[in-house]
Length: 74
Image 1 (cartoon, helix red, strand yellow):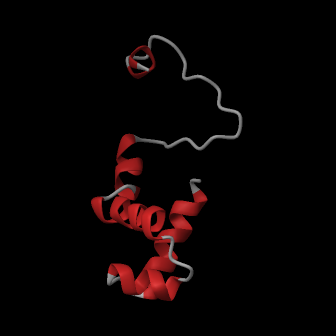
Image 2: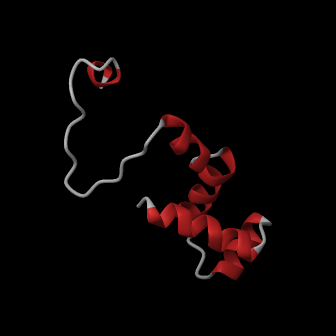
């Protein structure tokens, strides 16, 4: 990966994986709040957006939008 970042060799081809145009794009998606959200989903396994909203204190429309973005990148 270091050779790729230095431009010494091309990035490996992914079979269907997700790539990001920049590190900044990835960091904008994986904010501390979104990493916490993913941990709550992993650990508490909420059965609905309403339950997830109650666990996180985040509004349901916000969660739906955020989960859509996270789902889009796998």
